[in-house]
Amino acid sequence: MLCREPRGGRSALFDGIEEGGIRAAASSSSYTSHEINEHENERALEGLQDRVILLKRLSGDINEEVDAHNRMLDRMGNDMDSSRGILSGTMDRFKTVFETKSSRRMLTLVASLVGLFLVIYYLTR
Image (tube, rainbow, N blue to C red; front, side):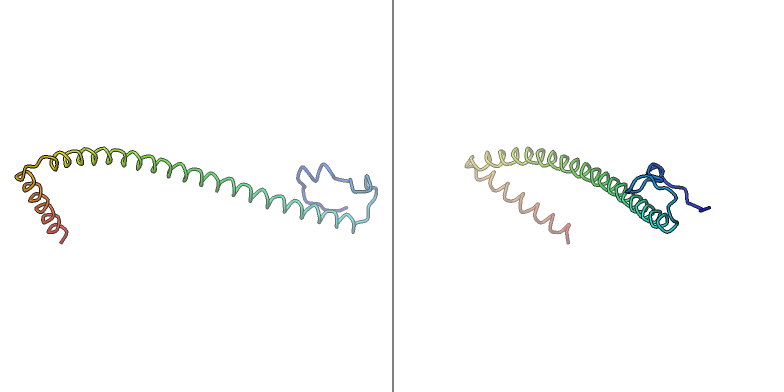
């Protein structure tokens, strides 16, 4: 009597069937060869299942990362739109200042820019 390992569902389906039909009183060497091939196939199948599970998990992680980056890019786009609005308002004010030929306003603008530059310079030192 041969001591066999428990087999999976696939090998149980094909137990006793070989290429030539139903096996009748096969010799132990051919049975061992067939069992070895089935065992190798089962190991290969388990290895493929592990790889598929790993790839599935990896693709899920990639999907989460892409979603996070898309949300971050959307926030950056919204921030850029609001900054563009603020800058366009500032540019409109500069245009009105430069369109008026008042030398006093121009002097005030230049002095405030120089003062701002000096404050920033001393704060960064």
